[in-house]
Image 1 (cartoon, helix red, strand yellow):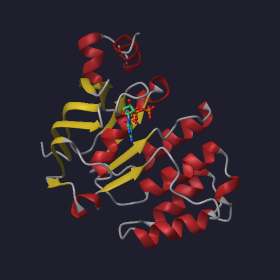
Image 2 (spheres, rainbow, N blue to C red; image 1 turned 135 degrees about the vertical axis):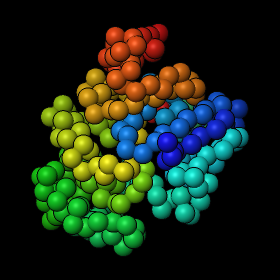
Image 3 (tube, helix red, strand yellow; image 1 turned 60 degrees about the vertical axis):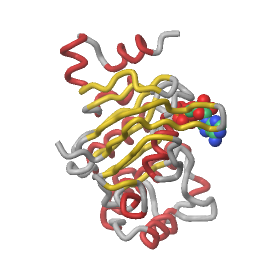
Length: 232
Ligand SMILES: Nc1ncnc2c1ncn2[C@@H]1O[C@H](COP(=O)(O)OP(=O)(O)OP(=O)(O)O)[C@@H](O)[C@H]1O
């Protein structure tokens, strides 16, 4: 299996705080992967290192065989947990901004997704509800023709109907040669779309399994397993 993401012995410290400790992880193509962990477990730190926004303290990391740098960054589309758009923008400005910024931005796909999401291009970003804004951010991230998509908490803080719509869009619009890593602690609502799950606790990976195996080996749903691993 050629890996899209390979992390070997990655440690990341912020001063005296170790956010990730000796993390090794391999993700192949064509997977929707849940990166699951409670608050502060290191999910955002891991994603930011894959995008090149943060440097590891130790260890090596490659994306499609490339060390993190300009070439690997072109293969990674990141939806951070805070919006990338500015409040003065209309939706159409946000789309144009991404089109100007990324060579691989697919405007046709973006318009199709906006329709699916029921977002008008003439709406002001500042008047969109939280759920609508998350739909817009997801549209922007998934409309790039990337190899690896990193979605940091794409369903955080939105109601169950909006969550369903966002998950449907991920499944509908994802390109099957690529992989998507989705961080969340809202496991029950989202587990139906995962092929694999990675459980991260206090900066360490405690489990990486195919969802199917989890059911066969342990007879458990992802949510049951999550509750067991994170029981306090
Ligand atoms: N810039 C920083 N300086 C110091 N400590 C940090 C910094 N960023 C993160 N941390 C710490 O590193 C740990 C991991 O944080 P991270 O944001 O990666 O976790 P997370 O799993 O994404 O959490 P959440 O679900 O709350 O977003 C936490 O203990 C956090 O307080």
